[in-house]
Length: 298
Image 1: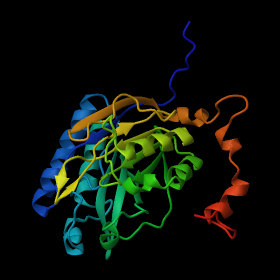
Image 2 (image 1 turned 180 degrees about the vertical axis):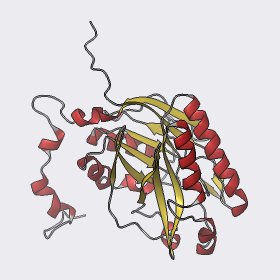
Image 3 (image 1 turned 90 degrees about the vertical axis):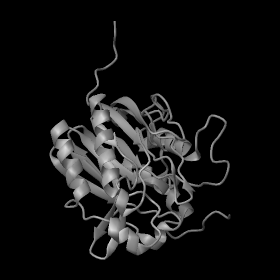
Image 4 (image 1 turned 120 degrees about the vertical axis):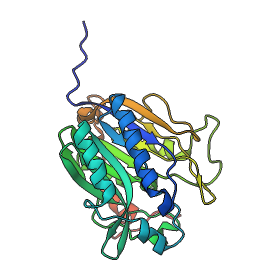
């Protein structure tokens, strides 16, 4: 007799890995390629599809002027409205990264779109390297969005190096985290013997300690001398990848079947270990420097 419970919110997730290229002359082709790949994933049964960071523009802006030329308003801009039309047509949830223009401000933004249109956005709060010269860091927190398939949290690339981000999303009730990425250089080696990058392991760790699935979409290729690391993956509530970790070099789509709301009970491991209950929040703040106190020596 099969006693496994039926999934309450079954989805097929897809992490799309490809090679968008910077340059205004490439922007339309980048957007067209996202539509093609979203369609391919939808044809394979996916209904939650995650694209990389800056998926419509490429990454390596040389100047702020160039970034302004690539950027769009959200949700009125061409890319967001185009993705929304496809999401409506195919009954999809789409997460994608883009350069957002809001007045004179530029943000590295992830958007969440559903069958009924634009749902929300998250502006990257931890900026990497020269991003600090281009973008303004987001300061509106870490939103979790209620959807018909479950509660969705967003993060962008370098955010995964800060364990507070997935923890805050999980503490706010996120059932799944969608991570849009342009993973680049990290302290060597870039890959281990299995061909995986450190960011993939950080994603697995964040997923495991929070018992929340993460759909992490990275890009591949080279751009203006920079190399991107691939290794897109989708984890289960236990943190282990479901299926493959993507190749560091190849365009590909990684798929996983998930019960999105399974994370709501995954925190309870046994009668004695409940990760939410076991947290010692009475001790953490001073040691982490969040409140007055003496931090540990470094």
